[in-house]
Structure formats: C-alpha cells, structure tokens
Figure 1 (cartoon, helix red, strand yellow):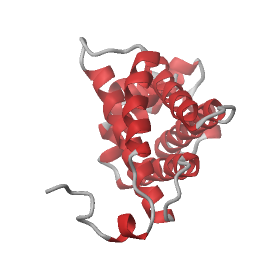
Figure 2 (cartoon, rainbow, N blue to C red):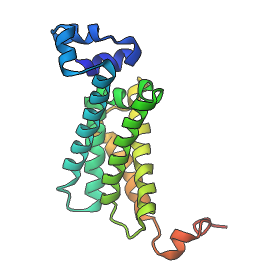
Figure 3 (cartoon, helix red, strand yellow):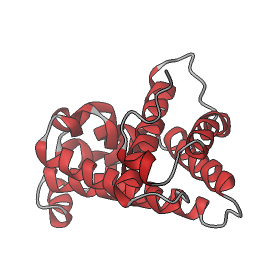
Figure 4 (cartoon, rainbow, N blue to C red):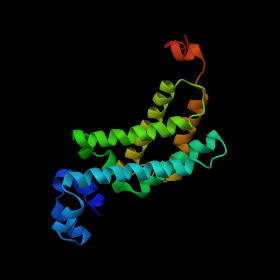
Length: 192
C-alpha cells in the first residue's frame, strides 16, 4: 500500500498519516516499524530492487542458451514493469532522482542489476567492457519500460517488449568483437 501511495503522489506529497490509513493501522504503529518516512521509503526502494533482481535472476538461470537467457531476463524485467507499475515508478521516478539519499539507493540497485547482467554476458571481454555493456542493456530496458508506462499508445505486452528488446541485445552482443584490438582501439569499429 505504501508503495502505491508513494508511486502515485511522490515522496513529499505522501504523509505517514496517508500510509497508516491505507494500511489500516495508526501512525504510532507505523512508527514502531519505521523510525521515519525516509526510512520507510528507503526500505520500499530496497525491496523493489531485491524483487526485480530476484525475478530477472530466477528467469535467466534455467536458460539453455545465451539467446534464451537474454529473452528470459527481458521477459522477467518487462513482466515486472507492467505487472508492478507502482514499484517501477517508485524505483525510477522523479522522487528518487531528486533526492541524494534515494538516488544512492537506486544507483545501488542498478549496480546490482548490472553485476548480474555482466555475469550473464558470455563473451570473452575484460570486466570493465562487460560492465559497460551491462549498463547499456539496463539503460535500454529502463527506457523501454518508461515509454511503455508513459505513453498510452505504447506497447505494454511484456512478452512482445521482451522479444523486440532481446533481439537488439542478442544481436548486438553477438556483434561485439573480442581480443586486444577491439578492446584498446577506440576507432577500430568505425568503417570508412
């Protein structure tokens, strides 16, 4: 309930009175569990991040191929976005980006996601190269998720979003050159 209230109204516009009323408890009971509104909001962000990471990891783990791992991971991500819109809005909304403490929590969530995605990228690359690719994949998925929730005419079928995005990710990763020249020559990939 608190997640939905904060996602709809933002951090500043949502009071602990609102949260207590929606939860069917008194405000003192709420404060027994959370010392402040900031602590509650932070816990919600961390919980959303854990759930998102768990969904993606669980979906990708049983895959028999890299292509299936990408598809399953994207399907889990977009399933989470469309099935948990308040959670997605909470984690990636303006209230988070405009507050240093909350932005730090969101960045930690993104780092954990990037670490998980980097481990799933089965290409012989240096660690930093993998990290950059993982962040690119996450950024792409976040942007598509935002579009799906923001635009009324945008596609919201998680399987279709996953298929379209996974195609780009998979074929993009398949085109990554490995070896010393690809990793150290910035202009090596540009055709004349």
